[in-house]
Image 1: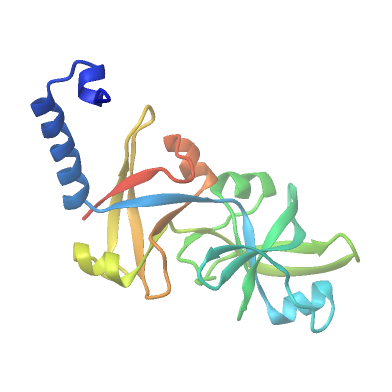
Image 2: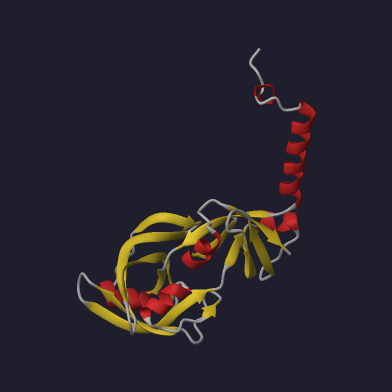
Length: 218
């Protein structure tokens, strides 16, 4: 008979069972959500897509991010008062208004004052230039924000843990740079998968990688 893990490492089977039981109970009682790290990107409007790429241009989906939402092959340059970013990726589907999502560090490098807003809220958004280097087309829009950190949740997940749409929670990540994020907005929909969106600054602060799990604290 093959030796068990307990035999190999001389672990008391009763003690091992207790450790496993406590670990399972911890994850059952507490809602954990997977982190997805977002780099700077643009949600673009029909009018602005036409202006940059030509009338009637259609985006080319490259990678699905959430059901029905994609990172696209197309990229543009973004220019602020002090700096410039090349190859900023466009996301589909097309939106009613163009929105550039950047980190706080990005805003300093560009030389703009981007507010921390809920995605879709462009009040006080910073003005930047958006260029298509391939054809020289250029537009200026008040569209740059630092997106408020948030979690996408399925209806099933929210119901299981008694969470609701627009609820604000905290999320704790363990590890060498353990960190707890406050002011995390929950967004619940039947179309969502369960994941927390963090920007590069937030991820680096906690040493967090794609696929790491944080604990939701109500």
